[in-house]
Image (cartoon, rainbow over all chains, first blue to last red; front, top):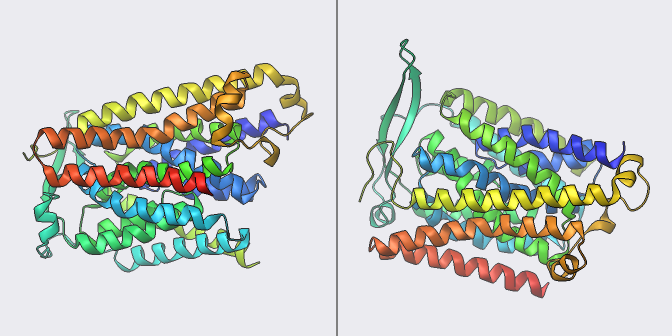
Length: 286
Length: 129
């Protein structure tokens, strides 16, 4: 394949991964690294370098719509970014000292654990009591979110908007530190860990979790990107092609989130996580 | 200070605007860099001759930026776009922090400052690698 065809193919595939990444709150990197390494045979470290840039680009493309439509919780995002950015710095610094096979194995294991966690907690938790949380109260993290959008038959759309309370912020911060470390280590947004942390531990609605994860991913990715850029692990043209595809895909994905049923979103998320984790584990352990 | 149900919260519109501007500018620079690179070495891209533009030999460091731009290297333009993209979320945090400061939400503004300090630390540690 000529470099031009390769760049065009990478950009096209990244449109799809950016769309899925934005829709699922993963940030796209979860798919970009496996695609670049498994399908295009690129070096793992260079794939991660390109991925961190695409993660930031995808977040910047998708998040404005999520903020405008009230899906993303800005206060929760910035609060949790303290933990994710700390973790990302540690992870990015550590990545320079780990072997490629170790990176594959860690990547696959992290995704598999996230998928299992989501699978174990699939039931709707509406109506369950949410424990009080002094940190969430002090920072006014509680909010309102759109649970579903339904057509009325007259062409108009009705939104089911409900208030939600945030809980277990300390647990969320702990989980986000780990998510940030994985993000820096593997060049992914770590939405696969952030979404379950917000959805399962902090009890945010799934759509608020994915939208807030998308917003956070940009800042976490920026912390990692600085380290990768300083270290010279970024091929500009590769990163550029990946970023452009991701931006286009993320914009498409952000439009789909409002109309996508929450359960369908969770099901897609699970299937994708399982497939990618198996592929990466096979590569790492082979 | 709570927003109406479904409406954007305080600071959300400002952050969204910053992200749109930064994301758009970064993507435009990346696109321009790719176009310049293709114009410079389109033949190599079509036939696969010369240095692989996606290979390990084409990596660039942050410190290569100024020299690369000075010599009109297409990779440096793409790198500048990547840097703008990487700086955009930090600018979003600045916008959120300023909004919260104006709204006298000191705790949230403080959290935003901590995030920005951590990003600066990332740059310092990355440079020391």
